[in-house]
Length: 168
Image 1 (cartoon, rainbow, N blue to C red):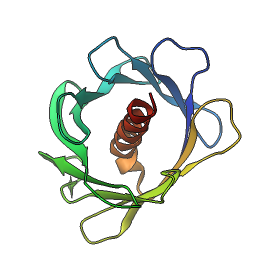
Image 2: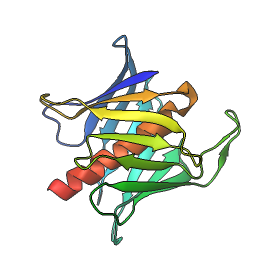
Image 3: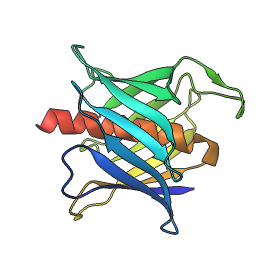
Image 4: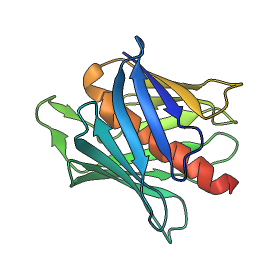
């Protein structure tokens, strides 16, 4: 399953539209006024389904993840040289998918344009690629299992927000 992640042009806060490969809007992401990044994820019907919230005053960047208002875990950047590394700590087992997300990690290239989301065994969950020469940030998220799409999207949002904070 491919998700096309596009930042909205001329938005005061972080705002994104996420499409499937046929151009159908699957998710909308709206940034909220907060200390640090706070991104609310809405499904195509306009229901809030997730939140990515930056935890401030940490040594390395850290983002909390919420699913329908319930804390599910966090993603944090590791101290690394040359290639960025992120670890993910999920605090629950997704019963309707029977998948344990603990042990996921993110490994990317030097420029942080392309990276993989891997499970604890090193098997790819999703491949993320940045499309160059676009007016706004645009990523393609190629998710192996459609049931992992929302969690993969939350990780991409956190990484993009971290890069945005670092560049400002």
